Length: 360
Image (cartoon, rainbow, N blue to C red; front, top):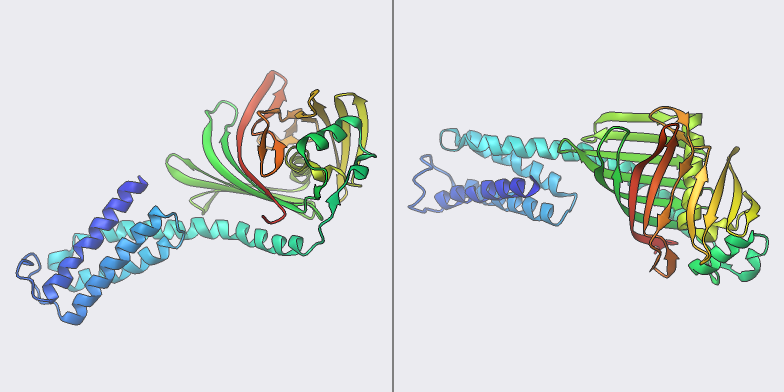
């Protein structure tokens, strides 16, 4: 669909060259019966350039395409009105361009809120001092967690102030098929913040979601075409749920942050321990499972609510396929699972594509 749209606006743009050619005396422009002055011909040329530029920006995935396309369509329509008898059918292409530009305005506008939050928190986080995580810092941790931090390579490296993560995601609701999404998230760990933005499609239409967690307060805002709110949730239940998700991120993707006074630890056995995490007055607990290599293989919490049913079920995130990414040994394949009374249900599958720490 995207490439067909690019093809249409490119052809539509090139057709405007006929007006330029007519103005400068091309004998072949018999399709345009009216006179076009040379200044007007330059406008026809400019519109052609604008449409082609729009197509190029779309190919380059530059979000500015809609602004250029909107300007092109508006000026083009004025030219068409002035040469209505010859050019009226161009109104269809301009209409398509206008609708696409308006939709993009709302879609990118929704994402701008996320980008603004990221920029503000990144500015604050990068201003903090960076300390090195040393072997001595691990001594208060349970044995399995110590082995995990050594295995990941977090020791003798800067403590993590913030991180950026990108995923390929497959998600589904109960009774539904998986749908493909891409996601990007930023976490900040001094005063914990989690900003998660996901993009996909529903019935061929853009759908995007923004999960925002700051100062212990969470919102979940999912919109169709950046306008129609499909899901809009906030409140104490979501605050606790997202506290679990935040701690899950810390355990799975930022192991250096597990040296934290907000976490109380209990060693269960040589490969299992329990953690109690408190943030802004909300306390959650989780059990962490490790293997003999020191890899964290699963995370279990009973404090996360399944928001579709607003009920708490055991929540687990089994992970596998550890690789070295950006200097840290970390899993690259994971799942999100709820255990309902009738059995386990995997509602999310994640492939970790990139992870960066401390504003890299």
